[in-house]
Length: 451
Image 1 (cartoon, rainbow, N blue to C red):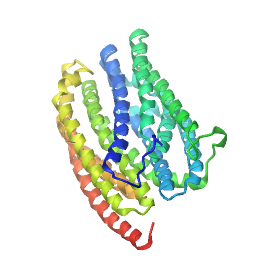
Image 2 (cartoon, one colour):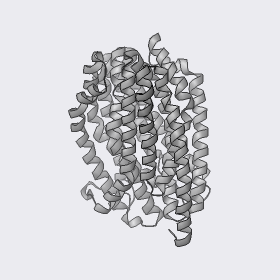
Image 3 (cartoon, rainbow, N blue to C red):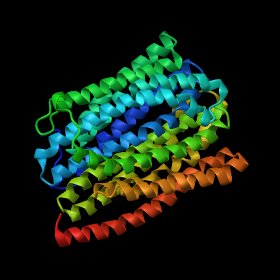
């Protein structure tokens, strides 16, 4: 079928690129649409409104990372069923996945509203942006069911090699998001409420499209709302693979919350400048993460089929393509940093902070490929806890020590930004060592006993 990729047979490089490209484009578009929120309030509202939206980035990431990590588990479970030839059982995994996403999505609306102000207060959000930040987060919570449905539904489609249609769904909703941003902020003067509402509506649209794809899908992937249920076997599998990935993302986000609270201590200009530059980094991350997800899915199917030589090739190709393409993207962003940052703000002080972050963080952002892609390959081999623990040690433990031991006493913004490349080198080195150790043992076992 045109929406599927045969991951088990034939040459890999072209298929990996064909699978990863829509993933990267999807993530880049998501970030562009998020950046549009910040750009619109920055240009047509105020710097405080921009800072209010920016100060929520780490909070939102912290709260949704755990549950989006579960979608990785869904991806691996379905891909394993495909690779092991158990296609008759896929429909139960599909309906369990969608049921779980609905429960999580609607529960998060209540959670967001309960913790919005206490969490932002704990982070030290400046008083002048607090009310706007709380308001934005509470309205943004309405997007949660759509975000969960879109990501879990997309995980099902990706497990069989379809990364194209989730991209199409996002493109359609993203255009609507930008139009609504401009309408709500410029015409109706709704500032942060407007961009939050636009986000909620556009996410409902992307989720609706993905659900429509699944409803029209051929068996065993076809979704029927009458068959929604949670099968214990698949729920346990999703949790076993996805929960460590989710905890990793949550702890990673927690470390970013600590860093964000430190950024907040430098004032609204630092918050706004860091937020603007961070959007450039997210573009870079989208490329690396796409190849990390590709490593998960391709490795899952081939590992379940016992094709260890293809698993080795998948690792080499995803690592080379991911880091190589990211280097090109980073070079372009650094070359055009002035016009890119001017899209978000014209304030000289804000731009100064943004430039510092660009040089210390964005310029070496490709380093994250060392642990994102190797960690993805480990998850594809059903080893999800180990990469989670390594990432927690490197991206949380290392950063917290750096912030409290070096940055807080000196209150130096440049020193704060240096924590990122230092933690990437530390984490990547450990992850690569463990990847090769685990791979050697796991592949040796398969060659002796079979998959």
